Amino acid sequence: MIEASCHCGAVRLELPRAPRRLLDCNCSICRRNGGLWAYYTAHSVRFRYRKRDVETYAWGDRMLRYIRCRHCGCLLHWEPTRRTSASRVGVNMRNVDPALIAKVRVRRFDGAKTWKFLD
Ligand SMILES: [Zn+2]
Image (cartoon, rainbow, N blue to C red; front, side):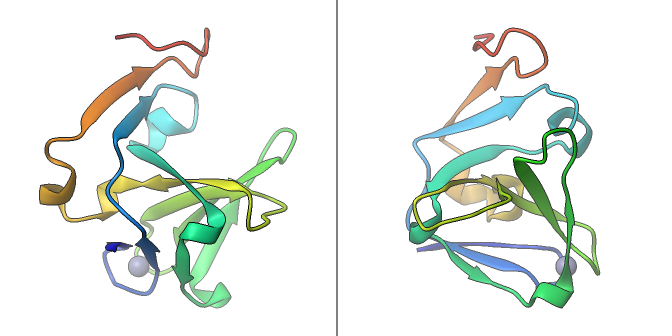
């Protein structure tokens, strides 16, 4: 198990394993947030936070929402607005111990235009 936590510790995620790949996306929200994403099925992640400790953001077709700590502002993950145990969630791996992902390959993804990898 590896843990992702915000800076103040109010929001924590327990992840089953380190990812095999990380994704650096240039879409309109990812480039602003500076996220470094790994994907997990929702049922494999333990979401350890109180609802009142997070803020969510959704836009456009509102299929996804981004979840950040209400206190320290760190962006932890995104999830489908109707999350089920089979849903895929994106976890911002900037919130884990950097040593745990130091050797994981980062792929650059063109989420802004082509939806293809740039590398
Ligand atoms: Zn926090």
